Length: 193
Ligand SMILES: NC(=O)c1ccc[n+]([C@@H]2O[C@H](COP(=O)([O-])OP(=O)(O)OC[C@H]3O[C@@H](n4cnc5c(N)ncnc54)[C@H](OP(=O)(O)O)[C@@H]3O)[C@@H](O)[C@H]2O)c1
Image 1 (cartoon, rainbow, N blue to C red):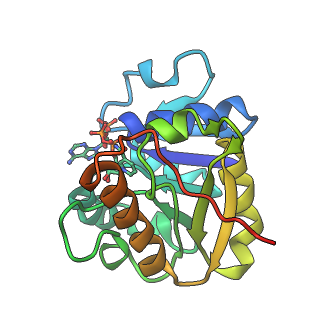
Image 2 (cartoon, rainbow, N blue to C red):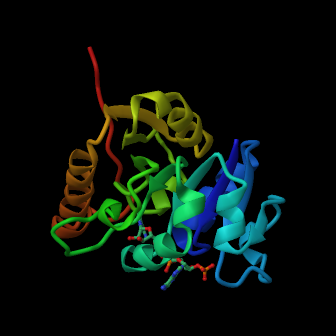
């Protein structure tokens, strides 16, 4: 897939490099497109957010939650009809996700926000990969599973428009990792009989 990763910090860099290494064509969207350090040895491209979005099948948002509105306003036309994967979290806000700041005509998915980034950089635990629970339109389930698997996580589909449930898992992770002091090397997994 052609994947735009908007944001070149901890989460954007981690996801973009992993996806490039697993064979996807990744373009980072950055406010500093001349700086390609984020790509490391992966061959991923770096361009402006607008250029990255224009050529993408899927767009991963890995920017601060409070930066989404400006990004969305500047790229509303290009986002129309695109699969947009919201990895942003607004810590301490009643609504963690950024859906309300995005235009309505895109295919909204919620993923990559439920665990600390260390667990996405190194998704395999002693007994196998961590799960990544996600919400997306049913028609995009397979594409989402490909993207999540590309990072090395096991995708678990929760349904369409279920970002509130995904955000509850984010709050669970914070409660366990931070509130209970278990530490950030912590992920969630579904067990089925
Ligand atoms: N840290 C975690 O463990 C974790 C886990 C899950 C989800 N998240 C969420 O993922 C998102 C990114 O987190 P992160 O830890 O990767 O943060 P980060 O290291 O600070 O990176 C954020 C990136 O967003 C871009 N950006 C665009 N507009 C910005 C603005 N107005 N101010 C600052 N940066 C801006 C920057 O890339 P350019 O300079 O290239 O534009 C920056 O490198 C956040 O919404 C966070 O809540 C974080």
